[in-house]
Length: 249
Image (cartoon, rainbow, N blue to C red):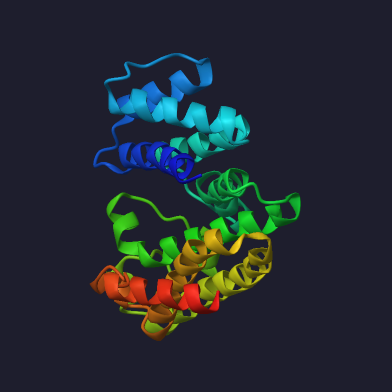
């Protein structure tokens, strides 16, 4: 199963890197996008060719549905196009393709029962939402904001640039609290699916979840930290979380 996870990650990581370059490498993205949709081969000596073959292997042998890959590529297409998200359901449409389908793919690779499907989707959603909170400045530098514009208006914020939020600290804190509360609710629902994950597989998944919870706690304590540094656990924290999950998971 580990090689299958590596193959899945190689594809989504490379495609994500293409669209996150400044400016986006639209040509490289479209090459792999078209090759996937049209079942074309790319040179195997190229990175795009290798990861495309990896994704096809995972789809053919591990139950990862082609529609999930289609939806992932659609969300990446929206990144290239600079799409804006007015309502929560608009943001969640992006999250489905960029993260929930990864949860579904992982559940397929780990051969989890159908009862785990809803939780797998929510785990992807929850983690992606924390990425949005943590990476506000990074996304702004790319000209992106994944949060609903309606949320900003409700909290009387014209945008999330630091020059704006520093002038309205109470509004920004309330905005971030709302986002973190959403994360908490989705993560709590996702936790219900851990009972379906065999213990050995559960340890790394649980470790990742615990580190995302830690990140959420850091941001909740001081939302402005997202402008000051990348909120990321140290290697020693990750190791400690692995040990804890191994002993008590």
